[in-house]
Amino acid sequence: MARAVQKRRLETRARLVAAAQEVIDAGSFEGLRVEQVVQQAGVAKGTFFAHFPDKDALMDLLIGARMDSILDRMVTSDPPRTAAQVTDALMPLLRFMTCERYVFDVILRHSGAAARAEIGPIATTFGRQIEIMIPWLERGPFRKDVAGDLLAEGIQAFAVQAMALKFCALHNDTDLRARLAQYLDAWLMPAR
Amino acid sequence: MARAVQKRRLETRARLVAAAQEVIDAGSFEGLRVEQVVQQAGVAKGTFFAHFPDKDALMDLLIGARMDSILDRMVTSDPPRTAAQVTDALMPLLRFMTCERYVFDVILRHSGAAARAEIGPIATTFGRQIEIMIPWLERGPFRKDVAGDLLAEGIQAFAVQAMALKFCALHNDTDLRARLAQYLDAWLMPAR
DNA sequence: CACTTAAATTGACCACGGTCACTTTAATGA
DNA sequence: TCATTAAAGTGACCGTGGTCAATTTAAGTG
Image (cartoon, rainbow over all chains, first blue to last red; front, top):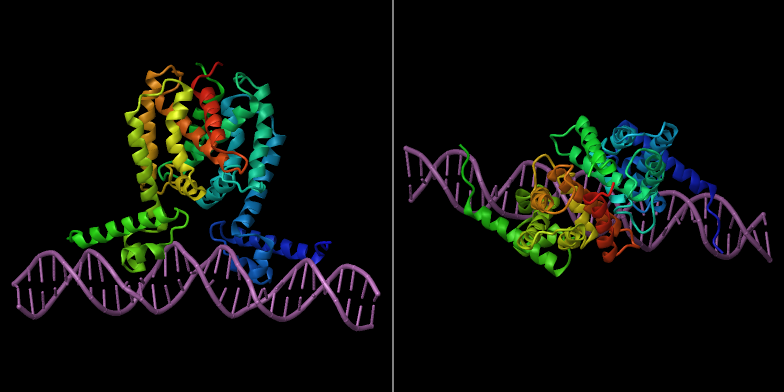
């Protein structure tokens, strides 16, 4: 019979997560070093890897949490009723997802996408995005010839595409919004 | 006045690329180690990094070349005339892009997407894909309410989405094809 | 052909993520 | 209360990508 996890373990884990957050707040996601995190948390390096399979798992957790809180705010706003409004509703999320090139890469690796077998925090938020968008699409004046979940998946696909293009040096934030708006207009309101 | 590059440099570079290809042929993209490549090529490690900014740049080159040769074959076939045929026409490319999880990750990082400022081999093939698809879309019985390049970009977005899902353990190759076909049908032939 | 200069190459070295045999700490039960 | 056992934590160590001051090689030049 396996023994229960000790309180000490939970505390250590919490210290690690808090330390990681402080390191990021003082720098960036990309700049985070495991060595720095364990030092800040006052534990040995090995302890880190006893709590997280690898550095990416910590990033998955922290980035996923940020995305989740953005989704929390998203559900409290009025549902968008046009393609342009859908774009606007998504912008806060997309802005965070592209705040750093490294963050976007981590997200791509973990988005339902390159997700491992088991589903992680980021992949979970991708599922949640779909769930949030489906009611928007069913109620709004959008195309009805394809199922809501397929429509929502398409929005995700276009959002990824638009974000990806943002990292081609020449493009900036207004381009991201304009580009996504153009995609979504064609996807959600086809004139045929 | 800068002096011209010496023949020796070109030879060394060719040896490095050839060695890398051999290492991959005997193993996998993911399994490639720089140490192994320089040993096979008979040069020092530093030489590798005098020729490529990092390991990723080599991967960009080799993977981009493979994609390019697949595109070469693609242009010689008959242009697809339905969404399902577009899917089929793309499958050889998508199969290679998903032959290894690592390969897909590299492609995502370099696809016009996460491309660096300067455009690399993989990003170039992404541009070429668009150019190849535009005539398909203009001639075929596809929607005409959006420009051909936008339509082509959408196909890319959906292809990435479909490939990404392939790596969720449960999905396999037939799923990739079926999923993409479903996306493209909705994207290219909207019933409204 | 010497001599100069820049290109090309070298390999010891570093940074950083990740491992594992070992030590310490806490729960369990007689 | 103390012995037993499993969980938690440790830090020296490793693999691998990447750096750079120093060295070798080749191309001008008088």
